[in-house]
Amino acid sequence: MQEILINIEAGERRVAILRDKKLEWYFVERIAEKRIVGNVYKGSVSSVLNGMGAAFVDCGLEKNGFLYVDDITAPLIEDEDSGFFFPAHGLKHRNAKTKISEVIKKGQDVLVQITKEQLGTKGARLTTHISLPGRYLVLMPTSKRIGVSRRIGEDEERRRIKTLLHEIKLPKDVGLIARTAAEGCNKRELVRDATYLLDVYKKISSVSKRQKSPVLVFEEFDIALKIVRDFLSDDTAKVTVDEIREFKRLKAFIGKIAPKYRNKLRFHKDPVQLFEKHNVEKEIDKLFERKIYLKCGGYITIEQTEGMIAIDVNSGRFTGKKNLEDTIYKVNKEAAEEVARQLRLRDIGGIVIIDFIDMDIPPHKKEVYSILQNALKKDKAKTNLISFSELNIVEMTRQRVRKSLESGSYTNCAYCGGKGIVKSDSAIVISALRKIKSFLKVRRPHKMSIEIIVHPRIAQRLVTNDSAAVDNLKKVFSRRIAVVSDDTLHIEEIKIKAVN
Image 1: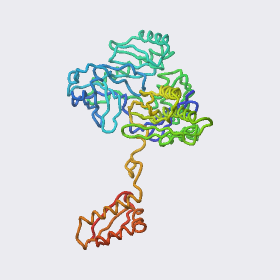
Image 2: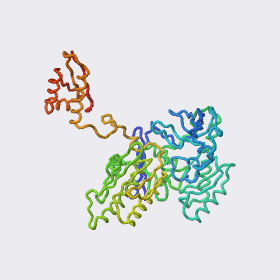
Image 3: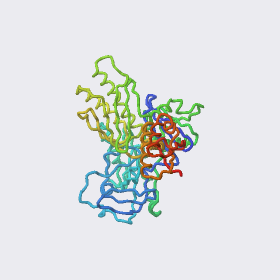
Image 4: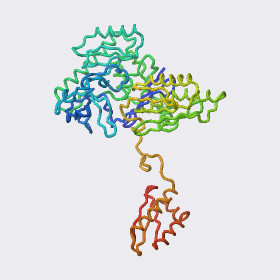
């Protein structure tokens, strides 16, 4: 059974989902920095670039969003259940000869939905194919198709749901996709969800006709409502919230979308904070650590770069009781589960390289790969897994829709500039001596003295351990060299100035 915990602090919403008291999902949203994925805008096309196959659209955001021709010419509906936060992208297979200028023009107003957050210097990714996710269904106003999520595996159940969907009265050219949560639902539940989504789209259409671009015409739910919408089920023991206004808001929301689950909502009255009571705070702190220890004694390390994520598996202090291969096999199996969990919890996207410990027995490789594959099936984000290479490395990609948890909570260190390391004292001293020498070679007047201004720790080295080197420079160049300490300087910063 799973449990949903919702914590509201000043300016922040946090949601933790536990399964068997273990943290399986974690989401955080700063109220002042609302996410925009899923929002629908009436935008204006600012430029059309045939070479890129994309148009830039002014939606009133900080940066213009970009709209690929794929996301205009044909909707993608196969991955409709891959994520509750975002709608589907355009088809990857299209007529290669189609130019974007043939389907969209500069200055044209267009109704678009955000499918990917603004990341770095890139604007948000857009689609003209609006997808509105409900509790059981996804409404596709630009597609006629009636479909069922591929995650519903039973053929008989798929046929039953599809029959019910065909019985729902829909406007022309509007489609419906049944989400995984629709499994076991009756017609009444599906009709209620479809009616709600049609009302939402009618409001979107009405606002877009009245308002001038650029304008927000539909705002996606905040994190608390989305989690309740997509995770609340028969498998949920309870939903606990620690703020009374949020409790009342969720009570009304659940009564509207899933009234049979109203009795699962609880208000946290305990003086002990909600996350602390369930030992979640400690787990959250671990999400920002580079090294994650496994129960067996091994560990994994996670290194994030701009281009990819490297994950290394190590046996650590675990030696096992049998032979080396069995020890390695056990560590790799546990690591495979934990890697999938960490990717999910940290919301890491992009290219991921996993370096497992070398295994010599092929069935062991196959089993570790299978464990990783099955663990990734829990993920809402789309993943693509490539089998073991000859070097025991697994390559994969995970859909990047928004900033990772780390990048949303941390910034690069102002001291090391994001490197994670600084020069050693001895290296800085050598660099300082080199700069003095270079400075004096260029400035020849004999009467000139100089000051070298450095961090106190480096100044101490220059007047003690390395004073002989400074004295030698004084002698060679016949100059006064004064060492000045400045505690406001970065440890690597070195300043030199001439003094008459």
